[in-house]
Length: 114
Length: 119
Image (cartoon, rainbow over all chains, first blue to last red; front, side, top):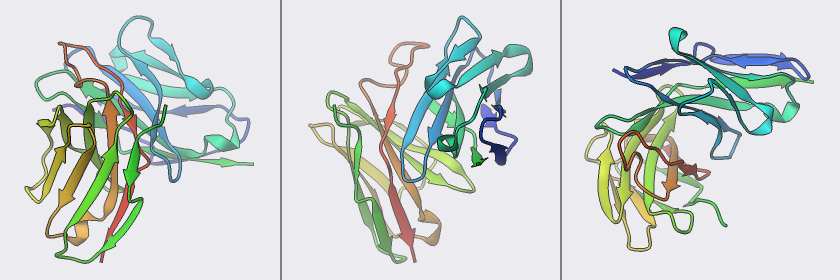
């Protein structure tokens, strides 16, 4: 069955430090992959997505992610974190088979120290 | 263009009661999906409506139901509430069905959610 794993439940970084959030997926075909961010009291906002082509994708707010098929990973990165990046981050894969829906990871909570 | 709106934002109910949540999609969007979000289970897909018809559903009991109106607004209803129904319920809209064509996808936009607490 398709699944998404975000190994880190909670991460704390200092403002200005680099960030990498891990995401591993299990999916038989070429995946459609997404990263969403959820700030307190807010809905989910799409940061970036990968459908095909260049394996390094750029998103909003200075985020990028790299698709590595050999590792079944789609890790999210940011070179310099801002305090406003503190939020919950979700990785998801779209099941393009008969049951077409997003399959979500459990999320990684990011805290940013000043 | 206004985003997805959900009402109410917060609800407190007791076990055994029923509840109705409302979602207004982005203008022009015809598909509405509902999700349940809890700390332990994460985001779980409830169902998707398009043109007033349920097109896809997740693995939830029949106590969870929904409907969509001709203006694309959607409601979801939970009957006979249980403590475990306490969650953030998110609504998302998109212009068409997810994967309307094979291997296609169109982006969905989320509302802020309704926080349901069952006592």
